[in-house]
Amino acid sequence: MRFDSRWTALGVLSATGLMTILDGSIVTVALPAIQEDLGFSPAGLSWMMNAYLIAFGGLLLLSGRLGDLIGRRTMFMAGNVIFTAASLLAGAAGGPGMLIAARFLQGVGSAMASAVVLGILVTLFTETRERVKAIAIFSSTGAAGASLGQVLGGVLTDALSWPWIFLINVPIGVVTIAIAVRALPADRGAGLSAGADIAGAALVTSGLMLGIYTVVKVEEYGWLAAHTLGLGAVSLALLAAFFVRQATAKAPLMPLRVLRSRNVAGANLAQMLALSGMFAFQVLVALYMQQVLGYGALDTGLAMLPAAVGIGSISLFASARLSARFGARVVLLGGLAMLIAAMLLLTRIPVDAGYVTHLLPVMLLIWGGGLVLPALATLGMSAARESDAGLASGLFNTTQQVGMAIGVAVLSTMAASRTEELLSAGRDRAEALTGGYQLAFGISAGLLITAFVVGLVVLRQPRVEQQVSVTV
Image (cartoon, rainbow, N blue to C red; front, top):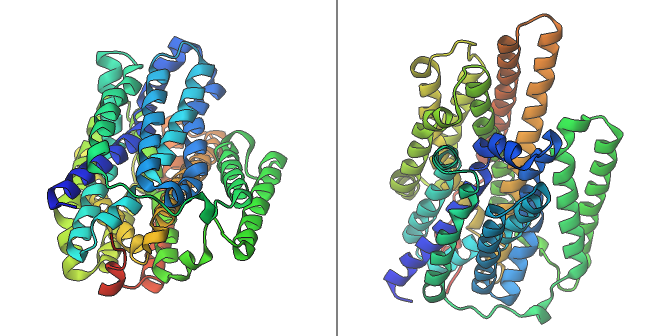
């Protein structure tokens, strides 16, 4: 394939990654307008986020394996078509049921397309330096997309109306599909006869979906409620059965050899821990600025813009050079150290925080995310074979989404519980909310410290032959 064509293909893959990340965050600032317009109940409104998350997180691993079997280009194109059509349906929704269904379909399409993106990328770029640069470019769009989504969501909701947060995906999706037809390399895949493992697919998909559903409902039921413990136990049993199945099946959905690489297993574990802290930071800082400091939705997005711009710039212009010079593992540890420092600062955030004195230093330290995400992607895909590239990509994206879901659920629940304790003790609302967020940021720091330890003890800098083991 010609050099220029590969970089055009990278642009297509990055655009899809950006849409996926934006769609997860752009909705948050528009929720009040959607609730008022469509008559959502408070409980029903939460399913605007949950329907997307359950479908997305639950189907990534299956989608990655199917991409290896039927062709990653085919899976990518089908996912984009479904996501684009679902975005149009969401923008035209006239009631809660239709919008929730559209959000679920968006999650299905996102899972299908996102699961194979890294698999396509590593088969396009086989030379070490080019691959590191390509991963950095791809990661920069996703890393900055979450914060940019909040800004864009505020602008579109205020200037136009909430349906446009979904309708904006339609022209982007159409252009992406049109370019992808010519830019992405055709691959036949191993064929379904190579083994789709329907039983394994049913076990892991139901286990992940049920597990994510259980986590997102913790805030409503509590950690020790029969609902949480019962469904959590069923989810763990399904996942345990999945691993037993993979060890015994003739054509497993996820060959366990993928986890024998300490870099693959370690990078996925470190990512789950790191994303739990990083994504919860985004949500909780936004809530702190609105509920305690009185920022509006657009003001909150603009306040977080330095973090988004910094993460994107570091990912795009610095991470590849630093990885080439010092190695992905060293870059990962440096980025995690910056994130840990940011979370520790937030544990001391006051009720009357000033933006320049208290929040801006945190936004600058969060630039460490621009080092962490590309380094994790490089390490997580370093040992992927060509035949397993879609699977490794799907696994990497699955741990990312599960980490984000668990992080938000756990830290939000802990913050809410601490806030209730402080209110019961007679503290005023702003002080109680701040105390809750301080606790959550402390837990986030703990998760990031654990990720640092995993990176230090488990991960190793890939050898050159590992980094170029995937060939076109």
